[in-house]
Length: 141
Image (tube, rainbow, N blue to C red; front, side, top):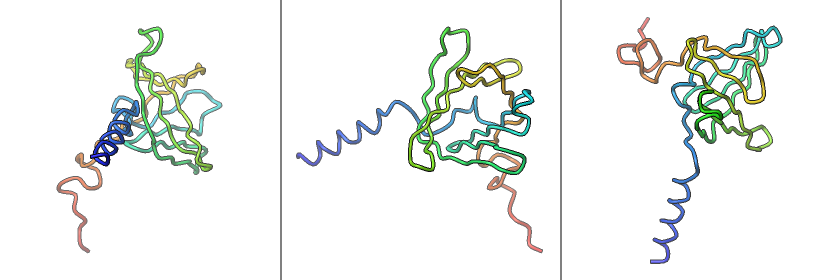
C-alpha cells in the first residue's frame, strides 16, 4: 500500500509542475527582428525545441524543459510565455517573451523593446509538404 501512495504522490508532483513541455502554436515559428543589431539572428520555436540563430551559418539548439503561459501585465499587452531550456552546463535558463497577436503577430523579449515578427510558422508534424506527411513517401530512383 505504501508503494502505491508513493507512486501516486510522484505522479501528482509530475503532473503539477506548472507547465508543459510543448511550445504553444501561437509562438511556434521562425521570428526575426528588424533591428540592425540582430540582422543575422533569428529565434525558432518548435514543438519541443528552441533554436537561436547566432549568425549567418550558426545556431544553438536547445530542448524545451517547460513552457509556462499567462496574461502579461497589463493584460492588454498580450500573453507572456516563459520557455525554459537547459544550457550546456545543465543549468535551466528561461526565455521570456510577450506575444502580441497583431496584425502582424509579434514577440518582444521581456525587458527589451525590439519587436520580432514571424517570418514563417512551423507546420504541424505530418502536415502536407512536411517530412512524414501522408503522400510524401520517398521516390525510388
